[in-house]
Length: 254
Length: 254
DNA sequence: CCATCTTTGTGCACGCGTTCACAAAGACAT
DNA sequence: ATGTCTTTGTGAACGCGTGCACAAAGATGG
Image 1 (cartoon, helix red, strand yellow):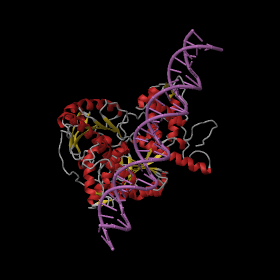
Image 2 (spheres, each protein chain N blue to C red):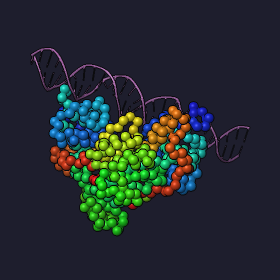
Image 3 (cartoon, rainbow over the protein chains, first blue to last red):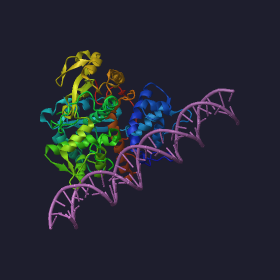
Image 4 (cartoon, rainbow over the protein chains, first blue to last red):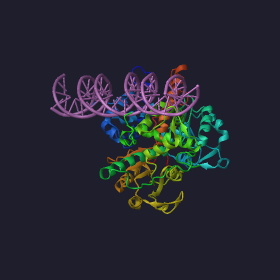
């Protein structure tokens, strides 16, 4: 970004690889923990261990930020916390709306990690009129009719979708039309959005299926060494596939 | 391709790239939707659009499965649903335990997508004695003292951790010791596990921070074209860092 | 049976991300 | 000051994942 200050090798925001960006929050968390224990400096080796990554990767990641460590010593914890926070945009306050206040929406609303990380729940929105006015996590739920107004009044640019799958795209469209440019989607749907809008997806069902794949593979290999066949456990070979479920958000039936 | 058609070209489980495995559930969902609409066949182009991926990628993904499409026609929906389900291990029943029945744990327990995808909630476990016996989603919560017994009695190999961060590693260790080999972790902690155990992490806080990064970048660029400086919005430049929050699961305060 | 047309399966090239390994930078002791 | 020792920052090699572009397969119609 050209932010500029003369030197400042970094600030090449656009130069920061996605993979690195995705790890910065991890480093930040580990650093925050160190900071709370008043640890003044940390080596790449130590921090990498705490974050669960390779130390060379961590150093390279930091090099994109232009973060300066001190050779022979390590990194200054406080300085790094500040730099990463700044890079991630956490030094400012991000108002967030949560749409769809079912089980999951409520869980999200109650999540304490919001406020302490630069995020603020500006509003809770649900389509059910019966929910309107009812407080969840101390915040009154508002009806989705007022979605546009809420977004605009609060200058919201980040929206969280926790509605059933069927409603997700419509909600998404309205959020985008109202000015939201970043969306965190918990509904099991592929959202289509115009250029310039970022979408991230969290999908419990997918995560579990990936685990099942590996689990099956482990079982299969085990069996293979003794048997040569399939997992011993359940040989239930239904054609599977039954209830239509593609209609509620991962993790939350309305 | 080499697969030689002795039928059964697949089963090269170990040959399937991770990236492909991660997309299979996506394809499966799209295919299930088609199946429900009784669509008999689908082209890679159509299916790719529905799943939000590139059609060449999709074809290559399927080629790892050894799935057979028909040139000039496309893929048989039902056949593909079965093949992918099978490959993912969803034709068998996976008993799952959820540890930590707070807001999120309850939301997970209520998630309808479990049963319909080959997963079954075998038990809900919480450390709070006051929760014991209390039914959540129709399943009585059990005390964590009985964790090992529950795992063994039910032959559970997949565990979901939705506890506060402080308890996660300990719970993880007990799960692993009891025989769990796949863990879905919602707590904001890096879990360390022995070889052979898979861990997948879902972390709301990280997802939001990644969105914030891009959001800030957008704002910065916008401003740059007119101004040259930083986002106009909030120039709040605190040293940031405040409440200790690293102590509850992403999305769920006990 | 042959021609045409559609759609798959994949060889290939490119770019990103990871990791190694090491030179340079600096702290610290003497 | 000078030497030693630690730890960073990064050049370079490698491997994975992606996407293009096309040949081969097979359906379909004449």
